Length: 264
Image (tube, rainbow, N blue to C red):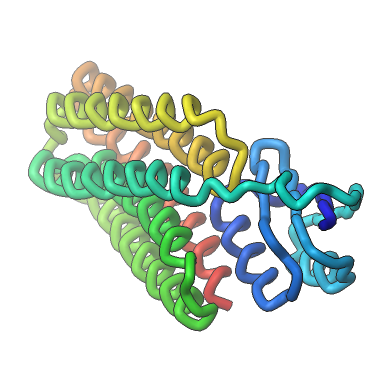
């Protein structure tokens, strides 16, 4: 059994991880892939030396560099997929639940910050769902799901940006700052609980580190919406809400293009 270590300088989130997983499909001898996204490191356990592994990684143009390959005992890699899947399902469900809550309250309160934050929650849920769906699925099905998810997310983001532009240039009511603050605070609590559970697992495997990064980003975005709500209260202006909404929609758009890469 061999263990090959690569640094992947452009591996920043689950999108790149899923891209690498699909690229590695079909290579005989690969037993396990271990991703450390925080440190941009990929460890591949494989039964035999195979130059195709490094070749395919290079083709992705993610800055992959081979660092070392050593012999290891076969029991060094233990797949904790079951425990990881439970955590991923938990985070996915929380993200999707708050997507429903925030999109509903955002439309009622006329807050583009909440609507944008809800789409960010949906974006995360789509990535987690895609990662879980990939287990045991065919590569054709994975790519189809990636394309559908990416186009759906992109369409929602562009629709949101067009609505932000319309609200910038036309007269609209000041959003309900109370709803903005309360709902975002609840989302902040939920994401903080998720991050605590993920950190408590102390896992460096697969999607766990990536999920921690995504959840940390969500906490920052939730805080941004709360700040926007406070600024709406202080200024009685629509602009703080529209500005934070624009920023979040741009983040969601970037995420959509990353997901679409998976469908190529």
